[in-house]
Amino acid sequence: MGDAKEMLPFARYLTLLALTLCVATTGCMVSAGGPVKIIATSPDGRPREFATNEAATAAMVAAPSPAGPTWAVSQAAYAEAVGTLPPIKPFPEWSEQEAAADALGRIGSAAVPTLIDALHSPDRAVRIKAIEVLGRMGSDAKDAVPQLVKLLDDPDEAVRKSASRTLGRIGPLADSAVPSLVRTLFQPNQFEPTSTSAARGP
Image (cartoon, rainbow, N blue to C red; front, side):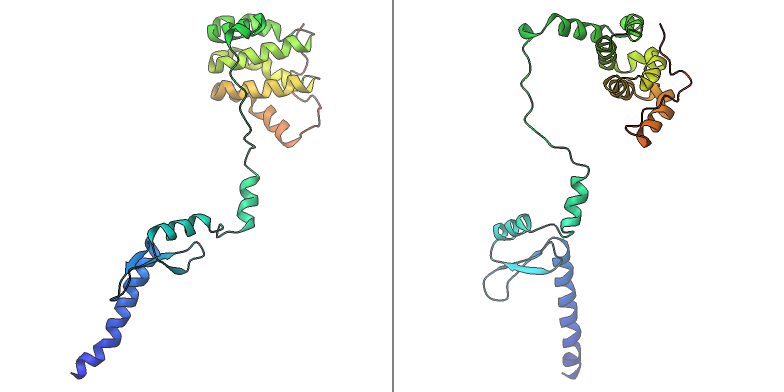
């Protein structure tokens, strides 16, 4: 009888340990001769009792993030605003220029030499359009990388930004652009031609 009394505290300890492990994982149901209770761990790390699974789930969803406002701010620093996407423009409403750009982008590498020539145009609009079409080709536009790197030093900001984006779309085959892109990354809005090939061709 004495051994049984001595074992009672140890048995209670094991029961408490098992309950703690249960709550720490997914939550558990406890019934001690009465109504069933749902015990679940709340986002703040504390066990709470709920009458139903639905109530426990609702509390978990509605509870604030355990990391607080700091977590929200850190996430917002990388989040992009998601607006309503514009409707897809039906083909009959395309301009001839849009249709030509789409066709050249689909043709791919065979159109690259002509588009490289267009990158030398004194007209910024022509340079930008050629860059955009090359961006549609992805890695097929790899032969245009040297000229696109030169355009990272173009006097026009829109041209420089378009060239950066297209180099990214070309992907790993545009690795020679890394030094110039890194310079732009760490020197934003400080246009100072520094590449060895800053001047555009005729």
